[in-house]
Length: 276
Image (cartoon, rainbow, N blue to C red; front, side):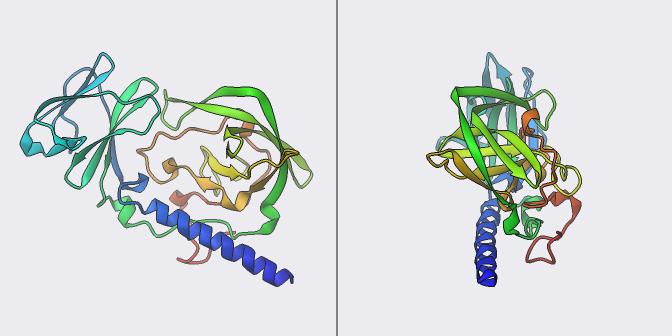
């Protein structure tokens, strides 16, 4: 009985991880990033990027010739094109043959991120190192909602940037004899936690990992499956602008579960023996 339950648990985790890795293999996803160029009010050419780019009065200006093969919203850019990305939102995509030049706004600063399906990071990706799945890392907690959603600001992996999260409430849970409390972001039906723990900077990525939380039951009970704790994009590329975990979510215990730091050269499940 125990053996079959464990096998089912491992099978479900492996299926989840397979889907997670397929998502990362998106030809124009975060693993395809090859550059992050911050714009100024001075027109300039960016390394390896056609056209001239600058910012004036909160708008991004692009000048290009037809030979640059830049396209936005289905129309080639010939002359001047003005874009207005939204703060913190997904970028506006300028196409350049197979590449996407994503125009973003982060903490009042404008940048161009280059997505290239031929990026070495994407082509060399062979999985995510992770701790072996273990049912003991599936823990029960209790969600206590705030009277009203709150805005919680965190820093980012890039100095000077901020992230503004919608905090829905707190989750209290125990690991062994230690009781922890974290702030949960998102809607009650789609909660997630950004956290660090005693493994952060040792076997796991130091800035934060993310964990999706089950929908609270009528009495507030939720499930936290730390086997499914995931890296943020910044664990895989230096061209992401990910948040760091809020101070409230820095756990005292070691969560020896979930994804590990891919920069450490640990083996991914399926490409060798997972580190545990």
